[in-house]
Image (cartoon, rainbow, N blue to C red; front, side, top):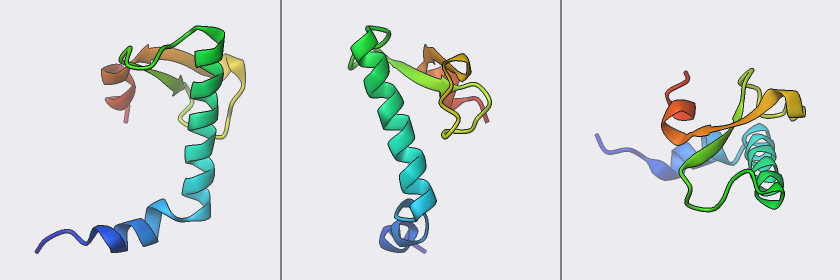
Length: 73
């Protein structure tokens, strides 16, 4: 059975919580780019150390390589 991407988007990605989490991640990335901590295409992510994308304290954010951040589940 093929995946129904339209249904997946309607169920998860377009929810208010998912939009707010995504906006927080994008906002933190933009701030880190302005500060010079990351650059586009450098292979790094902004990691929320406690796993909560809405916890944007500077003490909770760090720059790590993409493979390290995405393996952290």
